[in-house]
Length: 366
Image 1 (cartoon, rainbow, N blue to C red):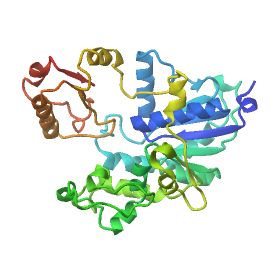
Image 2 (image 1 turned 60 degrees about the vertical axis):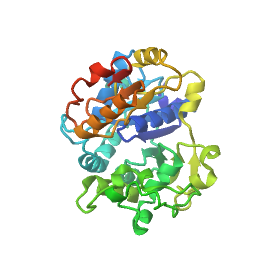
Image 3 (image 1 turned 135 degrees about the vertical axis):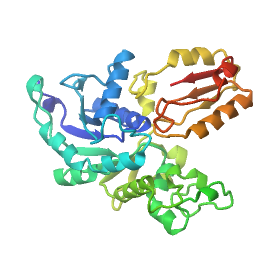
Image 4 (image 1 turned 30 degrees about the vertical axis):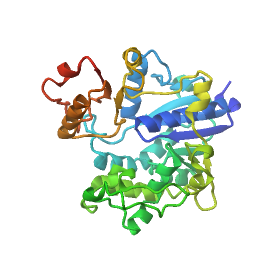
């Protein structure tokens, strides 16, 4: 029996290639598939390769490898090249990486059109026509694809409404003089931001994304890449936010609405799967859950300092050195997630003797 006979709706989901973005949209994909959608989940080749490798090592099958890329007959995984060399420091240079992603529209459209008809081992399947494209708010390349394919585009904000408002209203913050955030003013507690809609609490300059801290916006590639995304975040047919009104209020969600299209709060997206005991999370790095939990269980309650900068942030060697010395000087046990590429794509160099001096109260994982 063909999939088209079972699934009348077909959503293409395109996440930004970052851990939190992929996880949020993977949760959404599972929830939609359980409600009868056929899902095409599109990653960059680098992200897909990493997910497959980690999935295989951890004995998970959430992102299978192979020609069919189907799970439970409802989700298929496709991938496309981001146009960069394999050894390019993607996460460590968003000023180069994001413009590359912004140019993926033609390649994405070609991928979707060329994969619309099953071939080879897929001949027993019949994919339904694409109903909509659910696009991460930071994947502007999907706007032209949705327009050309004449399907609705759902703008998806993977994080809370307050953070999304601060991003979407970048031009307002610029006109009010809050952006760019001058490095010397970043900690100015007297310069509160009160002009944003949504009835959100006043923000400090440090509450804004570090992307907007720049000395010269005209030459800052990363700043301008995010500014470009802001322009496309205002174009779409529907808006979905990974939050819930009881947490942030209806006004905050409404502030992300597009003209003629109210935003909807659909989160927290992980919760239904979590409550049902279903594992719908994916990881770009091999997890060390067992060793972490065993170590944490040996520590006193509320005693551990946890340090993690997510999957995108990069730090200089000097910043990492200062952080290491601060953790050592704190006297507290600490769990520090040190990605292999966090030091601007270079091997992390910690202070001499740091690991030996802190081994009795520290756990470093990568």
